[in-house]
Length: 199
Ligand code: SF4
Image 1 (cartoon, rainbow, N blue to C red):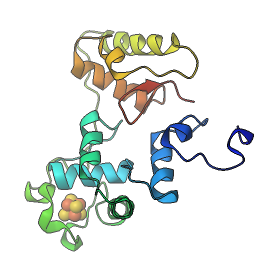
Image 2 (tube, rainbow, N blue to C red):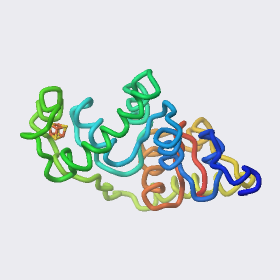
Image 3 (cartoon, helix red, strand yellow):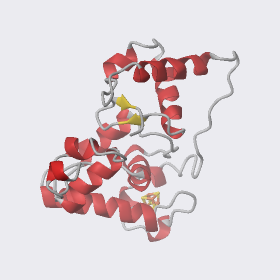
């Protein structure tokens, strides 16, 4: 693998993602912070800040949803350099001020623009809980279908979003099951919403 790239880091998101053990977050972070490219980096801190400031609600953890990814992409400044500073700033704010359980809103530099604060900080610090199933097996069935589809693909292939949506007609349940698989480290969700088995 190293000789394939002449002992240099690959320069594209797709090439980075193809490296063993590299997922969406690492590939995006390298593209942004090492190469200065315009790309949304979505880690836990950035998700929390975006969710609170721009969507006015708590980020409940688990896998980034397609809506969260789209919001992060939409907010990214057009200019390459500005987009890197943006990613760094959100990450830093989330790590030091807008923390998960005790955000320092009274000292926050963007408190005046924060929809979450304006809304009274609903659900502060709550994590997503998986609802207990009334009928045993339904989520297990969906999770099994997704895993089965992934295992049936040729090595290195991804399950496109449209293919996943054909597996189960209840999109909300499907998304929840995919998120739980991602939480459990059994699948990896890529930036475009496609899935693959962990590398
Ligand atoms: S005002 Fe509070 S919730 Fe909003 S970004 Fe700042 S620290 Fe986070």
